[in-house]
Amino acid sequence: MAQQYPHGHVETDSELEAFYRDLEAMSTTALWRVLTQQITDEPQPRAVPFLWKYRRIRPLVLRAGELVTPEQANRRVVVLVNPGLKSECYASSTLLANIQLVLPGEIAPAHRHSAAALRFIIEGNGGYTAVDGEKTVMRPGDLVLTPNWTWHDHGNPTDGPMIWQDGLDVPLVNALDASFFEPYPGMQQAYTRPVDLSTEQYRQGGLRPAWERWTKPYSPLLNYAWQQTREALERMSKGAPGTPWDGITMEYVNPHTGGPIMPTIGAHAQLLRAGEHTQAHRHTMDVVYQVVEGRGFTIINGVRFDWEPHDVFVIPKWAFHEHVNASATDAACLFSYNDQPVMQSLGLYREEELVENDGYQEVTGAFTPL
Image (cartoon, rainbow, N blue to C red; front, top):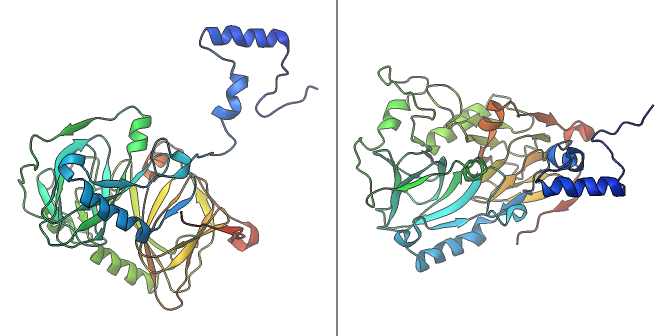
């Protein structure tokens, strides 16, 4: 019986080489020559696990404020570039991560685009984002949505800088050749709704306004305030078991559907109790984390990544990871966003827990910041 090969195996000879040249001349090729690249045994992301130290990046962000204006740059942003995706300047294969700065008195001009975006506020209190006619006031830890093809601008009427992380699905949109961009005819859009109206309508927990006929595919809530999120995490940490892999983790959801906040981007808030060390697992979603409070480390594919407040790190698809809160007395909190809604809707989402070594990885090295 002939030997079977999982991806095929064809011995090359002169006649086959001539055949391959004939195929190439017709802009074709033989599947057996490329099958191992096209259909891999498991995900092979080019993105690598990586961590950006905020205390090192912050001075560069502030320096950008001395060199360019929002009018010149459209958005004054420092892009977090994954070393495995240098040519594309992406954080992962599906997610873009930026640090944006708006100085006192500035306005980042209004525009809209096919890419969906979120903002997680790092510094400043009292700046705003406006989306489709509604302003929301931003405070540290708030999650602000600017869904796909919505008009949005940012402003800072305070006396200090506003700094936040932008998370966008630009890599995914570009991979689908679906990118559109349109500037607003003016610096600011018309503000037609009361400030923080959606917050007033939807902050009542399990209640929602019965008169609201929301048919859009994203959440109607513009701002998920950190104060309420942190309180919910604290309450759950008192008695809920959480998960073995992520501790106390809560998903930001669309209050109309209970599903993800946007069709292409999901988000979570996570609390690690004092001294907690989660077990390792992996999944087919890219995740970008931002540290909100506390200090600890995450082990990704055997490498230890130490983190502190405002650091950003990325876990690519199918990488084993576990989290550790280094404090014996205080909780640590992480915010994260991901491409899970896309992977689930396409039937491509998969999870796997580590079963060896009681679910914990062997640490083989430590990440050194650039």
